[in-house]
Length: 558
Image 1 (cartoon, rainbow, N blue to C red):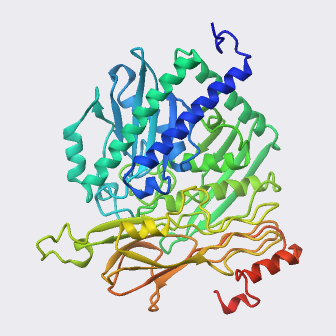
Image 2 (image 1 turned 135 degrees about the vertical axis):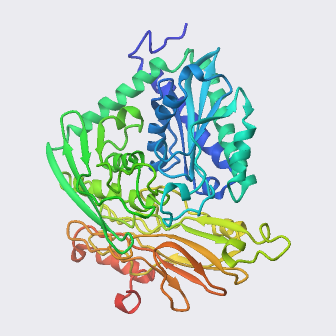
Image 3 (image 1 turned 180 degrees about the vertical axis):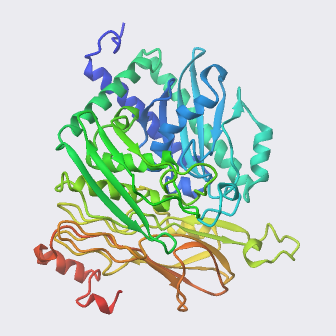
């Protein structure tokens, strides 16, 4: 009989074989989501999470593809969903659904599907995924709503599928509340399919590995990960460090303050003193704050340790209720990523005071996702016979500024950190909606100089193909506060947006772009690391010859 961890817990080779199988399965789960999802946000950009949980709701393994906001929020969501519908109410063939911001990943545009895995009639675990929906009804994605009730359709924890049968009433409800019912339904069913196929793959793997379930191997994974994470934390000097960052918000700057404390058995991140909740939809629920703050630690401390419930349990995040980082229902939260994606920068700034040789400079951080809407809601043309269906579109494509310079390398240009989502090919962007991307290139002089320079932002120009008006859901930051350099490095450039005809655009909020206008977006650059006087002259020359720096940068860029 094949040995097993229960009989031979020191069999390291067998443990690694089992672990590799589990990682392979969740990676395939993510790939399946990207192959079958209708939405290009999932299909082409990987704005998702895919993960395996044991029957206790502990996340054991996650796919590399996915954003920290999705992955770490899903780790919290599955146990919360099981509080709503416990194990004894689940049957083979069931699939749970929710987009409750306070249970899952912080806004209604993310749908979480949790699917129990049964083997020989016994529930052994769950596959779960969280994926971004381009439209979920309401106003559309942006910070304009005054409460969550305006932000779209809310789906409590329900059985989307019962014993293999789709809940037709629930699906009908969803379809009736979104602008693109066919696409949304197809997306949701693709999430179910990915979880179902992954469950069968897991059961086949357990047969080959001679394992009855996930309980024993799950305990080993969680314990090893937690122990390894604590070991890494203990290598840091004991004590506290505080850092803050100021963000644009809506004219009144938002202050995020973090105090990091290194203890014997873990790290504590306390955001006491951060700004109070906003009346606009840039607020965060605790799950999302916890997700991105924890990720900031994981980037620097124990980055090679698997990200799961075990390693995450060594990090405790505190955020005052009523602050912009921990709002209660029904505060608006739709554009929570504008603030949330800066949390790793704040946390890493704390760690820079403890381990300065390991932490990069600040970067652009927040994605510059260009979300556009066209059709009768925008141009008011309801007079045609096919007013609602004709010319209607909703599209979103992601763009990124530069990351901060690293202690021994330049920053990365046009790279989405910390979200990790991919940029969509221009051909995909233009095929999904009647728009033209006239320009998309690196933005000269946008990177902060230093011994190692920051990453460069981008210059982008976009217009509708027929000159019709469109709506821009602006959700941008770093337009008044630059990414700071570290250890003497210089700051990156501000971001900016407007019309090529000369009008400036607001960085946040829905704005109607008039006919025959062309929008431009100048994405911010990352900060530099170390004094610019220490930079290799050969590297300076390389950047100048590539057109990325001019001899007189003020002549070309503000």
